[in-house]
Image (tube, rainbow, N blue to C red; front, side, top):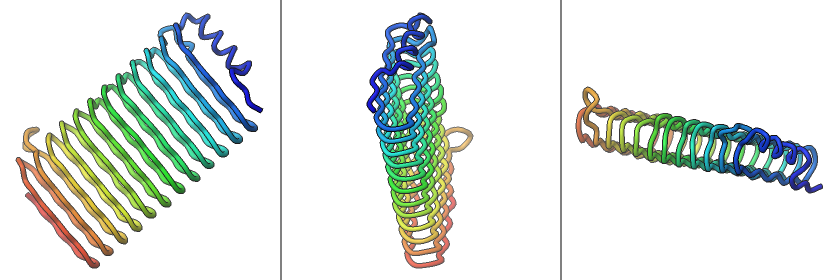
Length: 296
């Protein structure tokens, strides 16, 4: 049975008006059995915000909360069964958050706290996927997680970050990815195809860039970038390959490094450690059981 502005939603909107929150809008659209949707805009300092929630299927749960927020938007769309979505926008302005779920037992969580002019998107299609985005104390950031398949895990954290972009794409089974950014002007992209691959990136400073592509089974990549202007590109294809990159300056200055690692085959291991200014390293491994270490 389709419910537009159900009695519960109508009461919620009325409570919002009594609490002196101004010109907020909430729309809840449900079609199915046992779905639950909650929209909270009761905070008096929540102004000109909007929430749109659409549920098709059975036993979904969607929660959207806007507190001390101005001019922001939350979209949550659920299809299938037993999906869970939660979004909190608090203490910021002009943010956008969207969660789209199709399948079963997917979970998506977005936090935008003291964030301005930022966008966060989660897209899940499949079974048992988990995604979380946290944008804290920043502005102008973009984060997107897209998961297709089963039991993936993904996290993007943009903390005290400005004008940074982070993207995670997962396809297959059981892949895991994490991105952490603080500072300004960073770019991080992780694309995983296959099963049980792992990728972690951490960026501080300014204008660092990471691009990771994993296909195959049980590959691992870990990238840490400190200071400014460094680039790391990792491509793994095969089984149980391992890549590590550490890029930094000297005494808080420097950077501008380039590291490229390409691995195909199985059980290869590559490590690049760069400090100072404008170092370059390229490692290419094909076959099985190779080890390469570059320190600059």
